[in-house]
Image 1 (cartoon, rainbow, N blue to C red):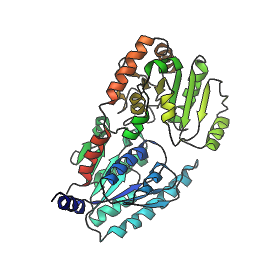
Image 2: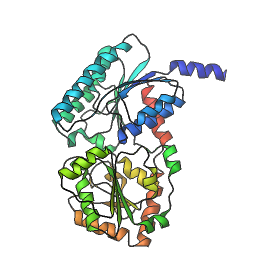
Image 3: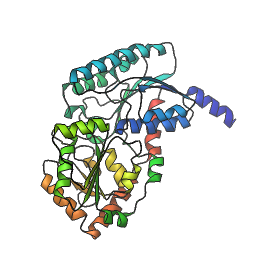
Image 4: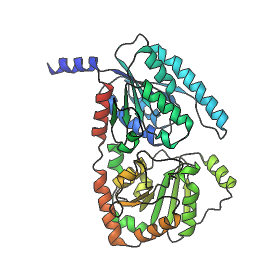
Amino acid sequence: LKQLMFVLMINCQRKIICFHLFNDYSGSPKVLHMVLERILKYDYKVELITSYNGILDDLSKYPNLKKYSYIYRFSNNPIVTMSRYAMIQLYTFFFAFRYLSKKNVVFYINTLLPVGPALAGRIMGKPVVYHYHENAFAKGRFYKALCRCMQTLASEIICVSDYQRLFLKRRDGVVVTPNAVSEVFVNRLIPAPKEAFERKRVLMLGSLKLYKSPLEFIALAQYLPQFAFELVVNDTQENINHFLKEHKINISKNLIIYPRQNDVVPFYNQASLVLNLSDKKQVVETFGLTALEAMSTGLPVIVPTEGGIAEMVVDGENGYKIDVQNLNQIAECIKTILSDETLYMELAQNALAYSKRFSEAKMVNSIEMILNRK
């Protein structure tokens, strides 16, 4: 009887058709990887349409996943980038119609960007579930237009924070499901506050986009030569070299800049403090996965004062909220945290305790219920 019920349950499950534009090692594909890997283990059938060469490639090992890949990359020329984006939307729009006669499928759209397949899904009358990671209203007109499309096309919208949800005009069919760090990732982290305090190492993970403040992080390293600084950039070494040359940057001896990494666990395990210096005047973090990863390692964080990431931090308890415009204040805060062991231990313990509120199982179960909803 149990076997029969299991077979019936699997037959009733929807096939998940997932679209994600750019497959790299940033936050949104990492969360998508976590969701898809877990539901693949639940024996769902998943078809994934995304670009080559990123964390999602790892899912190809599952026999119940079909992956369709295309070539896509950003360009320093915005016209070239938009042309490539438009071509991919056109391609995935027509690609989506292969599911026209398929029953019991749901389109799972990760981020705002795959608007082409979302439109196709709506035309075909398929359920369209958006996993909304951005805050379109802190970005330009293009993202605002995509957000309006999402609110029109989506059957349901998954937001990652209460802050993010507040900006949506739509109220029905909108749920908040906070991100989480995968259990596999967490199990490899080694919280060791005393050793971390003694290392005096400041870490930031980000990109070369100026609103992520790589220049300000480099300036902090120059201002605080008594501490070690590590910057992990989600880009190639070639682009990093070009960036440094373009901005005429001389790297101080206490700073190491790393290109895109397949595995960032060793960096957290060797850090003392993690920064997020996103400029709230240009972009607002809707969640802050790197902050949660840091706290899961028992590391204090310094983050901006607005956004979903700010919801995660209480000043003086598990970190501090300071905007990048107050760089001198950030520098003084770093000195205080890494000089006061009693304060550091308290921040580290509270950070680790806070991270326990976020569960991969809870997040994925919530998303699974939405994807399988009739």
